[in-house]
Length: 168
Image 1 (cartoon, rainbow, N blue to C red):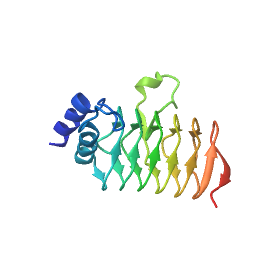
Image 2 (tube, rainbow, N blue to C red; image 1 turned 180 degrees about the vertical axis):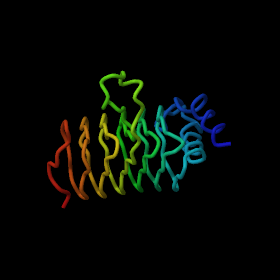
Image 3 (tube, one colour; image 1 turned 60 degrees about the vertical axis):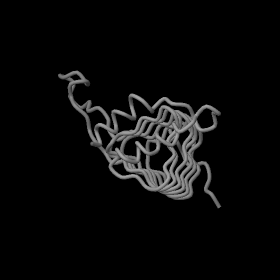
Image 4 (cartoon, helix red, strand yellow; image 1 turned 45 degrees about the horizontal axis):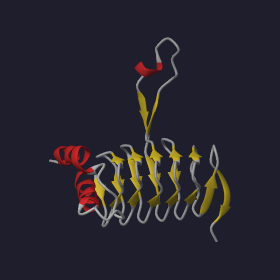
Protein backbone atom coordinates (compact mmCIF):
# COMPACT_ATOMS: atom_id res chain seq x y z
CA UNK A 1 0.00 0.00 0.00
CA UNK A 2 2.86 2.40 0.83
CA UNK A 3 4.28 1.92 -2.67
CA UNK A 4 0.93 2.86 -4.19
CA UNK A 5 0.71 6.00 -2.02
CA UNK A 6 4.30 6.89 -2.98
CA UNK A 7 3.40 6.53 -6.67
CA UNK A 8 0.27 8.68 -6.24
CA UNK A 9 2.37 11.37 -4.56
CA UNK A 10 4.99 11.36 -7.31
CA UNK A 11 2.56 11.25 -10.23
CA UNK A 12 -0.28 13.48 -9.07
CA UNK A 13 0.71 15.67 -6.11
CA UNK A 14 4.47 16.31 -5.96
CA UNK A 15 4.34 19.40 -8.19
CA UNK A 16 0.99 20.89 -7.20
CA UNK A 17 0.68 24.59 -6.20
CA UNK A 18 2.05 25.99 -2.94
CA UNK A 19 -0.22 26.94 -0.05
CA UNK A 20 0.29 30.68 -0.53
CA UNK A 21 -1.23 30.54 -4.03
CA UNK A 22 -4.95 31.41 -4.13
CA UNK A 23 -5.59 28.43 -6.40
CA UNK A 24 -3.74 25.93 -4.18
CA UNK A 25 -7.00 24.39 -2.97
CA UNK A 26 -6.39 21.10 -1.12
CA UNK A 27 -3.06 20.25 -2.81
CA UNK A 28 -0.65 21.26 -0.02
CA UNK A 29 -2.64 19.22 2.49
CA UNK A 30 -2.65 16.19 0.19
CA UNK A 31 1.13 16.35 -0.21
CA UNK A 32 1.51 16.25 3.56
CA UNK A 33 -1.03 13.46 4.02
CA UNK A 34 0.62 11.29 1.37
CA UNK A 35 4.18 11.83 2.65
CA UNK A 36 3.00 11.03 6.16
CA UNK A 37 1.36 7.84 4.88
CA UNK A 38 4.21 6.47 2.78
CA UNK A 39 7.32 7.35 4.81
CA UNK A 40 8.86 4.97 7.33
CA UNK A 41 7.82 7.26 10.19
CA UNK A 42 6.28 10.72 10.22
CA UNK A 43 5.14 12.88 13.12
CA UNK A 44 2.24 15.28 13.45
CA UNK A 45 1.62 18.17 11.06
CA UNK A 46 4.38 17.76 8.48
CA UNK A 47 4.50 20.52 5.87
CA UNK A 48 5.60 19.39 2.44
CA UNK A 49 6.37 22.04 -0.16
CA UNK A 50 6.03 21.73 -3.94
CA UNK A 51 8.49 19.39 -5.64
CA UNK A 52 9.79 17.77 -2.44
CA UNK A 53 11.32 14.38 -3.18
CA UNK A 54 11.23 12.27 -0.04
CA UNK A 55 12.31 8.65 0.25
CA UNK A 56 9.81 6.18 1.69
CA UNK A 57 12.60 5.17 4.12
CA UNK A 58 12.95 8.64 5.63
CA UNK A 59 11.87 9.58 9.16
CA UNK A 60 10.26 12.98 9.74
CA UNK A 61 9.44 14.50 13.14
CA UNK A 62 6.51 16.61 14.31
CA UNK A 63 5.83 19.97 12.65
CA UNK A 64 8.81 19.75 10.29
CA UNK A 65 8.79 21.43 6.91
CA UNK A 66 10.28 19.90 3.77
CA UNK A 67 11.32 22.76 1.49
CA UNK A 68 10.41 23.41 -2.11
CA UNK A 69 12.24 20.98 -4.42
CA UNK A 70 14.15 19.42 -1.51
CA UNK A 71 15.59 15.94 -1.83
CA UNK A 72 15.71 13.63 1.20
CA UNK A 73 17.27 10.20 0.65
CA UNK A 74 16.63 6.95 2.52
CA UNK A 75 18.10 6.54 6.03
CA UNK A 76 17.66 10.24 6.76
CA UNK A 77 16.08 11.15 10.08
CA UNK A 78 14.65 14.65 10.47
CA UNK A 79 13.67 15.78 13.98
CA UNK A 80 10.85 17.99 15.24
CA UNK A 81 10.32 21.61 14.18
CA UNK A 82 12.88 21.54 11.38
CA UNK A 83 12.45 24.11 8.61
CA UNK A 84 14.25 24.20 5.31
CA UNK A 85 14.50 26.58 2.42
CA UNK A 86 14.16 25.60 -1.21
CA UNK A 87 16.48 23.20 -3.03
CA UNK A 88 17.99 21.53 0.06
CA UNK A 89 19.66 18.17 -0.58
CA UNK A 90 20.14 15.67 2.27
CA UNK A 91 22.16 12.61 1.29
CA UNK A 92 22.64 9.22 2.95
CA UNK A 93 24.70 7.38 0.37
CA UNK A 94 27.83 7.95 -1.63
CA UNK A 95 29.62 6.17 -4.45
CA UNK A 96 32.47 3.81 -3.66
CA UNK A 97 35.68 4.80 -5.44
CA UNK A 98 38.45 2.71 -3.85
CA UNK A 99 39.29 0.56 -6.86
CA UNK A 100 40.98 1.97 -9.96
CA UNK A 101 40.41 -1.13 -12.10
CA UNK A 102 36.61 -0.70 -12.03
CA UNK A 103 34.67 2.42 -13.13
CA UNK A 104 33.17 4.32 -10.18
CA UNK A 105 29.63 3.74 -11.41
CA UNK A 106 30.15 -0.04 -11.11
CA UNK A 107 31.65 -0.04 -7.60
CA UNK A 108 28.36 0.34 -5.75
CA UNK A 109 27.49 2.71 -2.95
CA UNK A 110 28.13 3.15 0.75
CA UNK A 111 25.01 3.75 2.85
CA UNK A 112 25.07 5.93 5.97
CA UNK A 113 22.60 7.31 8.50
CA UNK A 114 22.17 11.07 8.24
CA UNK A 115 20.47 12.78 11.18
CA UNK A 116 18.96 16.22 11.60
CA UNK A 117 18.01 16.90 15.25
CA UNK A 118 15.25 19.21 16.55
CA UNK A 119 14.65 22.93 15.93
CA UNK A 120 17.01 23.24 12.96
CA UNK A 121 16.81 25.91 10.27
CA UNK A 122 18.35 24.79 6.97
CA UNK A 123 18.79 27.65 4.49
CA UNK A 124 18.20 27.54 0.74
CA UNK A 125 20.47 25.44 -1.47
CA UNK A 126 22.18 23.65 1.44
CA UNK A 127 23.78 20.27 0.81
CA UNK A 128 24.17 17.88 3.75
CA UNK A 129 26.47 15.00 2.83
CA UNK A 130 25.97 11.37 3.78
CA UNK A 131 26.57 10.38 7.38
CA UNK A 132 26.46 13.85 8.95
CA UNK A 133 24.68 14.51 12.23
CA UNK A 134 23.22 17.99 12.73
CA UNK A 135 22.66 18.90 16.40
CA UNK A 136 19.71 20.57 18.10
CA UNK A 137 18.91 24.27 17.55
CA UNK A 138 21.34 24.62 14.62
CA UNK A 139 21.18 27.21 11.83
CA UNK A 140 22.78 26.32 8.49
CA UNK A 141 23.36 29.33 6.22
CA UNK A 142 22.11 29.32 2.64
CA UNK A 143 24.43 27.66 0.16
CA UNK A 144 26.46 25.79 2.78
CA UNK A 145 27.87 22.33 2.13
CA UNK A 146 27.89 20.35 5.36
CA UNK A 147 30.57 17.64 5.32
CA UNK A 148 31.04 17.07 9.08
CA UNK A 149 28.87 16.75 12.18
CA UNK A 150 27.49 20.04 13.53
CA UNK A 151 27.26 20.59 17.32
CA UNK A 152 24.15 21.82 19.15
CA UNK A 153 23.36 25.55 18.90
CA UNK A 154 25.94 26.15 16.12
CA UNK A 155 25.46 28.58 13.27
CA UNK A 156 27.36 27.20 10.28
CA UNK A 157 28.02 28.41 6.76
CA UNK A 158 30.41 28.17 3.84
CA UNK A 159 31.87 25.52 1.59
CA UNK A 160 32.74 23.35 3.39
CA UNK A 161 30.55 24.51 6.27
CA UNK A 162 32.32 25.81 9.37
CA UNK A 163 31.01 27.02 12.71
CA UNK A 164 30.58 30.81 12.46
CA UNK A 165 28.97 31.40 15.83
CA UNK A 166 26.67 29.85 18.42
CA UNK A 167 23.07 30.70 19.25
CA UNK A 168 22.87 32.30 22.67
